[in-house]
Length: 354
Image (cartoon, rainbow, N blue to C red; front, side, top):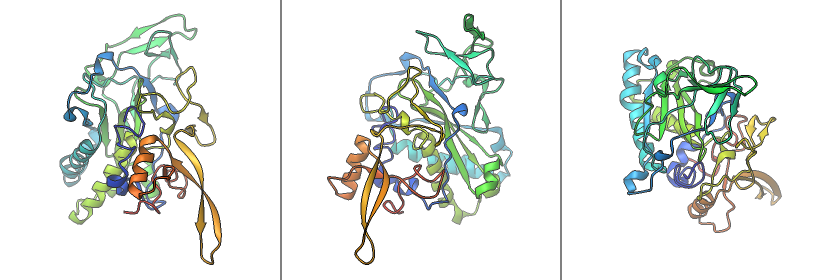
């Protein structure tokens, strides 16, 4: 997409016809959690020379760099081989072929987190400055980001009058990549709650188009099966979870852009949209998601009014109309059951059954 629209990266957000099986699920079995605001770094400055003109179809393919956390190497040998030799290479190969992105050159270099999560932005300076100090470790989900993937720490005094860089200079970053995926195999609290195989999310978004440039995928060790008959199911799960990290998440709907790169949701002077405290998410506009009333004909001839949330970005509308051969379809329905983690974070399974 152009940023997070229904444009180029993620096709018409998620290629309805070919990827329906990956982003729809039985309510309760797929539970994506948008990371809390304090765990996400927005508006990461990327050097201008990273943007280049399109030159060929090959240049549009999404490039994902996998970085394995040390926890993966600590898995039993059969699980380690499964994860590093089969699951993630196959999942990434597939996603790189079906998704495209505005080509960039140069390294992905992530912003350091702040020790107190308090930061300032200076006029005419694209970087963010931590108040007092940067955090000792910058995390992406359960993974500690390597120091050589990070920009130099920039800090301001509490008054904001004294600001500047401190500590080691910019690292070399990750070359030749549009998105860095940190993969771990840690038994976290989430692993014990829902019997999930894996979960994933984004952790840093670039400044120009609000596109995720880094995310993580964590595999729950107790759920990793090396049985051949389990492989296809695990592969589908891994693909599904990475798609959430790439942008199909209720936590990112407010950051979607149109084909021209303009935000579809109004922004404050901070560059961020309004935050909905009750949802714990940034609030999207009706240019992204709209509530629509459907009339259902139920048994006995009775008509029932049913309200649904519909994703209405232009390319989603175009693809939904083509897929269902319905020229007046408003967009594509989102899942309305399953509670937090399922609702709004997947296509409506009733319509996009595997």
